Image (cartoon, rainbow, N blue to C red):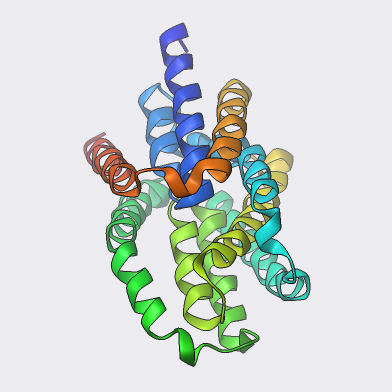
Length: 251
């Protein structure tokens, strides 16, 4: 990795940390950047997952005021996130690498769609807020389990998925939903990271660059999240995602 490539990975980590704190989908920036500097896709995905954990932690700390009163709910849902992440991580490590190369462009495409439709999704969620389930219920737990499996396999836009799931069921405003999303995403990324550290091939230089950048980005993203221009961020995410799809399909 050249010095300029290292700067690019670090900058992608800063952007991803900030985006994950507010929107989710930061992996659509870091993952293709790591692939672009020469990492094999599976190694890039594993290293990206580990590197984003510190950023997830700073995001949670930044939203700690909005987490008040959600402890028991997150303990229950967190079990689903951890179990799902283990399933997704094991699938990533056990399936052939060519399966990842086929599946990931599809997942990136779906993630980009989710990022684009998120404003409409939020309006739909607000319209049905009065019908929200006060405690989540078993369907939300199963949905969080599925989102955890997705995040353990390939984490881009898992935040959008979680916001959609939590917001459609819980009687909470969007900021408290986003805070809960950050906790569950941290559990997913942290669980997968522990698994990958034990048994997978890791590019530790890439991990360090992403981790440093994501820690900075997560802190400022959580602190100034309400001021960030979300439409611009969504546009950047979608453009990077399209480039990643083209690169993976025609590599």
